[in-house]
Length: 585
Image (cartoon, rainbow, N blue to C red; front, side, top):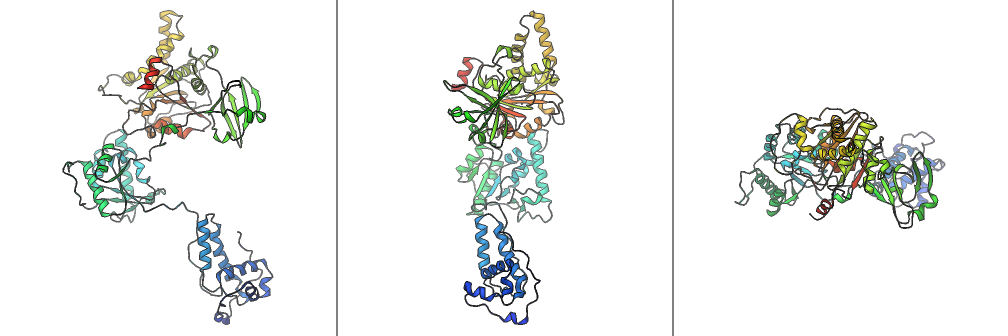
């Protein structure tokens, strides 16, 4: 509701007699009207002022009280601008309980004005005790607990100090955590005993306090748990805090499963660190494909616009299916007796979307480096890989679905035939399935050689298909040409690099953390295309799951961007043995 207009005449000071006027016991609407002089009744502002006076139950003595009454009206109206019902109720209650006379010369009320705020937290704030592995896994975890408080045992600081040396990801995270703690402790007025506000360094999402263990805590653990072990000392701290702060909930947060099991065996609350997970369930991951409903043509056929442009046909559709679509998402319609449709969403505007038909790479005339696609999802993937407007492609799928073969075939065609990119750069996460075999001799590419068995296998197939009629010399020349345009690089030396006009393949990307994924993708310079592929069911990196993998993180963050695309390959094409094994084992 807008504020009333300005008064038509200037307000004057009250006469001394006005201070002696007392409020009537109960004012009816008639009485209120009669109490206001005709001079005030004549203006709209005065009518609004009269309403405010009736709400505040304040007496009106003379027409010279216009200015104080407008102040009361303004204070009563300001909270009503907040759309929440709670704020409206509060402002009404405040207006009704105002007991100061309108004729008073007292200063305006200093009660805070209601503002839009986030939903109030439910229940009391918890106290989370962080294990060392949480801080080494995510250095920003200190600011991920919203309004709750955090407690760090002294043994955690000792373990952080022991992990800060080296160039590994764990060492970098340990150093980052130490710098964060130093910044929090160094804030002016920080009190370690009373707690340090977590938002004191600008992290507004954190509303709690950080507490350090500044004194010994009394606890008693079973004799079966050695007292000198760091994990057991942390469990003892959690037990002591649970007794000290009862009935407040004290929760241990740890990435160590055995640690959480021991805590629950002792009757202590324990949780996994969930904030690093992009998705709670891997089945919720964006698949990049959407099946149109069975009645699509029946409902939308009359309203569909279509036109031809080059080799592609475009359809402009509308209806309830449009809000479910994303840019570069693939849609298909298959039904007996109905025309099939395989298309990609090229534009979304208001309540309409434009679908673009696809190029059929399953046909021999459209083969890419001798490779033809064998199923629907592979054709979708090849359309993304061969599109120069798509800068980032993610491919997921089980073993044998053709991820590496499709990426290599598309890369060789665009490097050697189309000259769109200067060379192919291939890298992968060097995480062993089993025991490590030790140090590898040779140069960087020679050290990466054993990790690139998938590259060798696929290159052998691609070279055979290309130089099959040229004899032994022809195959050797083809292999030499292909090898000259493919560079194998280690991820350990990617920091600070910039790739110009390169075709970059990141294999086994499911073993990357979100931070490593960001480091690799941000290496892309002008004209570079990056392909990330992996099988989320084969994660070998400790503490990584399907929900927290860097590949899942990239798929979720890039969906809907006009220059990226994602496809989940569903059907294996390696062999019937591999397909059966992936299903039953």
